[in-house]
Amino acid sequence: MKRFSSVLISIVVLAVFSAGFAFAQSPAKDLVDDACSKCHSIKRVYSANKNLAQWGITLDRMIKKGAKINPEERDTVLKYLNTLNK
Ligand code: HEC
Image 1 (cartoon, rainbow, N blue to C red):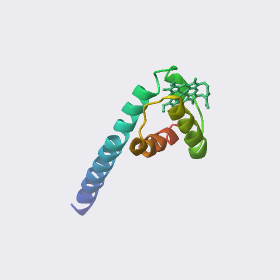
Image 2: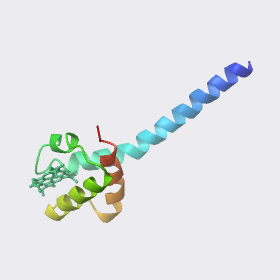
Image 3: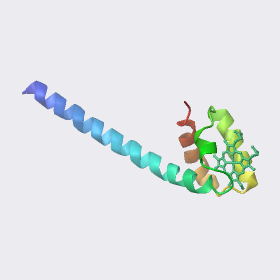
Image 4: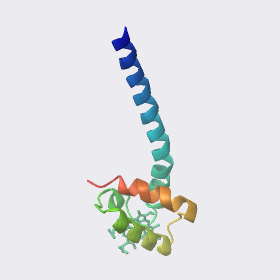
């Protein structure tokens, strides 16, 4: 019984964590899919392999060009881009 409970608790904890992750990730993904596919294919973003610092430089360059990412969104988008590294 004790063992069953701990398995159950692990499943619940895992489910809550992955749901939280999905919630945290999808608004950033929506932003990127929308704002970063205006001038070039979104493949350009998903095929890039950059670290956090490199993404920061690229993102700022894209914002200067006209990408619609406001200062409050920049951090979330940057964190999301950093998860794309292969
Ligand atoms: C206003 C047009 C425009 C928008 C919007 C835009 N880009 Fe770009 N992007 C460009 C142009 C032009 C180039 C090629 C010249 C260059 O690299 O500066 C480029 C190149 C790139 C490259 C390849 C070059 C490199 O440094 O690896 C990546 C990656 C990239 N963009 C990511 C993004 C991301 C992420 C977004 C969304 C935040 C975005 N772009 C939105 C115009 C845009």
